[in-house]
Image (tube, rainbow over all chains, first blue to last red; front, side, top):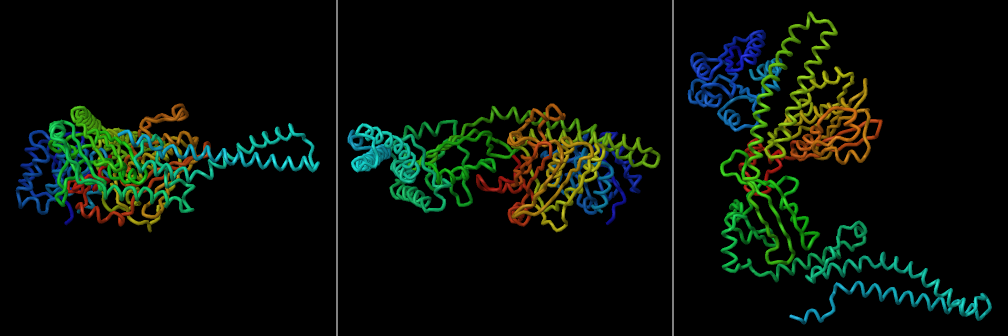
Length: 123
Length: 510
C-alpha cells in the first residue's frame, strides 16, 4: 500500500522541520509532534501509513511509544514505523526494532533525499 | 634419584657425534693427503721435501676441515633434528626448541613425515600412559576453589578436567563443561592450541580484554587470560583467567561518553547535511556554476566530518570489542550505490577522476552494508588525499575463490615498502604523509578492523611516485549462508545463541 500520511515524532526542531519540509514537498501529508506524549496521542487519534520515530524524546521515549503502539493491536497493522536516531548499536534501538519497526536509520547518514528513497521503497 | 644422571644424556649425543665426525673425516683427509704427496715426492713428481710435505698436509687439512664442518652442518641437519625431536619427546630437559617438521627443506623428501611421526608416536604414547583426570590434593583443591582467579585444566583432547568457581565455564550442548568467553576471531584458544600441539612441546600464550558476555548484558566480566601448554603433562593445558572487569569497565564508561559525544555531534551534522541537501535541490535552478561548486564543497566537507565521527566511534568500539556487524546478503554494486554520489562529489570537488568497474555478475557477499560502505569511503578518501590534481582513482571489484575483492587504485605519491607494514596500525602516519597531508591515521585501522571482522583481509601494494592499490576481500554469501541463517540473519542472534567459546565469534566485530 503506497504511503500517503506520515507522522514525524522528533524533538529537535531543526531536524523535524527539515523532514516535514521535504516530505510535504514530495507530496506526503505530514503531521509533526515534538514530545513523546503528544506523539503517542497523535498516533492513536489518526491512522498514519508511516511514523518516523525518534528514540531520545522528552516525556516518553521512542521505545516506550513503540511498545505502546505494539500494545494497540489494531494500530500497528498497516502502519509502518521507521526508527530515526543518532544513537547507533544501542540496546534501546535494538529493542524498538524487535518491537516491530520496519527500518532503523541513523539521522546523520540520511539526508532528506535519501529518506524519500527509503520511504518510496517501503511503500 | 641419582641414577638417571649417571646415564649419558641423549641431548649431548649430537655434539659428541659431530665432533667425532669432524675428527674422523679430518684425520682421514690428512692421512690421504700425506700418502698422496709422499708418494709423489718418492717418485719425484713434486719436490716439497719432508718439511714441505708436513706443511702441505697441515694446510690442506685445515682447508678441508672448514669444508667438512660446513658439510656436516648441512648433511647432518636431519639427523640432528631427529635426535633433538627424540630428546624433546622423551622429556629430557633441554633448552633446544622443537625441530619444525614444516621447515621448507623437509617438504618433499619425506623427512617431514619422519619428524611428524616421532611427534605423533609421542602423543599416542601420552594417551596410553596418561592417568585419568588428575586428582588434586585436598589442600590445593580448597586453595584453587577459593581463588578469585579462574583456573581451568584441559587434557590432550581439549576436554576440561578441572575448573574452579571463578572460571567462566558453562555446560555445552552435550552437558560437558566448556569455556564461555568470546576470544578474538583470529586468535581463539582452539586455533592457538591446534597449532601448538602440532609444533611445540611447551608454549605460553596470553589474551587481554576477553569478555564472557556481550556488552550490556548483566554481570559481564572481562578477563586477561594466560594459557600454558606442556605436552604429556597430566594437565596439558592450564588456563588462568584474571578478572579485570574493574579495570576495564571504566573504559567501557568512556565508550558511553564517546557514544554520547558522537550523538551530540551528529545532531548538528544531521541539520547541516540535511539543509545543504534541501538547499542544493531548491537553489539548483538559480545558482551560478561557481556557486554550485561552493555548495558542493560544503556538502563534501559535512560528509567528511560525518565520516570522521564514524571512524572515531568505530575505533573506540573496536578497541573495546563492542563493534557489531549485521551481516546479510548484499550486492557490492548496491553497497557502492549508497555512497556513489558522495564519493563522486568528493573526487570531483578535488579535481580527481573516479572510475568504477563493478561487474553485475559478481556473486553476492555476506556483509554489513554500512560498514563496508565506510571501508570503501575511507579508501577512496585516502586515494584522493595521496594523489595529484586530475589523478585517476579506480575502484574495481572482482571475484576470487570464496571472496569478492574490492580494490581502490590511485596514481599518486605512493609509499616505500617499510611504510606499508605499519599502515594499518592505529594513528600511524608515515613521515612523508605527516608532511604532505592532514589526517589522523585512524581510517586504515578501522578499515582493517571492519574487513577482518567480516572474515576478509586487507592489503596494500605501492610503488613510490607511481601510486598505491588497497584491496580487501569479503566472503561470498553462499560460503557463510548456513551460519547466517542459523543465527536468524542477525549477528547478535548468532552470538547470543552460540554455545561455545569459538562459535560465531566472527560475527562480532572486534
